[in-house]
Image (cartoon, rainbow, N blue to C red; front, side, top):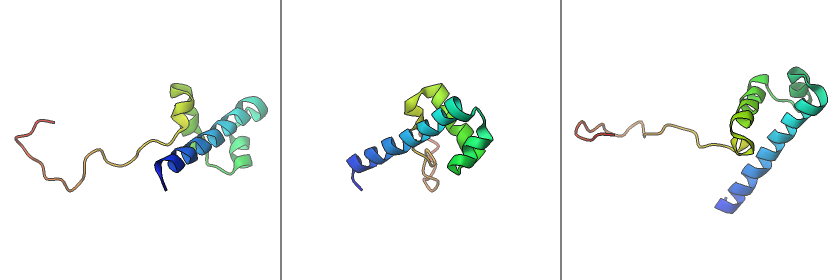
Length: 81
């Protein structure tokens, strides 16, 4: 998958997440009903809701995950990082 396709897929998923949040805010005003309707967990819904409120639409896009440093990298006591 190329960079353009990956970007397009991230945008599509962010729009889906935003649609779920709008459904909660405008239709049900009930997290449990919204999550049942879309078939998602409440924890996942609250995670996206919090990121949307803090960052905006950009927060709904997938972020890089994983360790910041490689777990098998040898530690060098002379380097300062």
